[in-house]
Amino acid sequence: MIGYITVGTNDKAKAEKFYDELMKEIGVGRLFETDQFTAYGPSMEETGFSITQTFDGKPATVGNGSMIAFNVDSKEKVHNFYNKAIGLGATDEGEPGPRGDTGFYAGYFRDLDGHKFNIFTFIKE
Image (cartoon, rainbow, N blue to C red; front, side, top):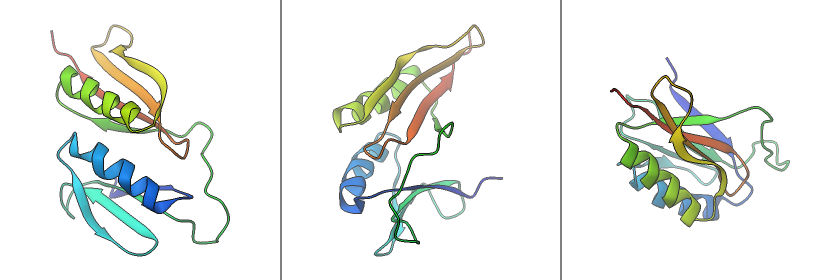
């Protein structure tokens, strides 16, 4: 149902450098870009992620209570993605590990603009 998700940035070049490297961890690259907007994803037919400078010219801000979650198929990929984000300058919001007893395994971080992200998988035991 979701086509794509967009977050604002106040430094597009810096955000692109961050996401170009981070998205490689899940096998995703740039789909297209304009002077204002850069989109990432596996294809135009699948859910994507994008960054943009604001259209109204005001500073991009973080949504309180907002979070974007990326789903991967292993604990190893959760750790790799989380560690890559931290290595690229993201801030920790919760190291990878089990959350509850449902098999949900996740790590949390904030990107360079302060947006909150989650990388997760479900462990089937």
